[in-house]
Image (cartoon, rainbow, N blue to C red; front, top):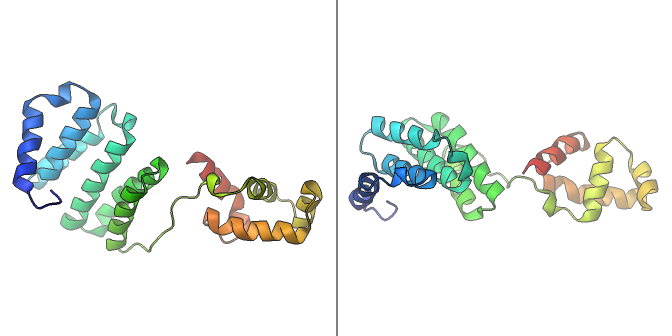
Length: 190
């Protein structure tokens, strides 16, 4: 489809359906219904096939394929129904790609979100971006301890603690100490 050969893509999707690939495995069902949706000529068929792909009982077991289907659905929604309809679908796809570490695909989803009017956004926060010392200090700060109290526990000066927190905030996508606890919880979930 990206090469402009929509008719050929449609023939492949229909052949997959006719060969009963969706009956072979849940992954093939997700991919086949997604391909049928992407190549559909009418909105009703596209909506039906996207719904069928996304509602498959085992779709969540294939997060990459599901995110690709959602990205394609979001693109189609942006073109047919506008940015407001596409926004939540594209956001979910981008977040899934980021959690999976598929940065190229996440970038594509973020580009579509920018086309919807979203500002450029950094990737989801991750604890792996923090050094062990930064993580330790961030977790202590999240409990409400002052820099002096953290310094006493870690045998660092309050100024060094402040320096570590200064580097932690952008890595977690926050600007204040008050947001630290929630940011750490979100990062643990990714």
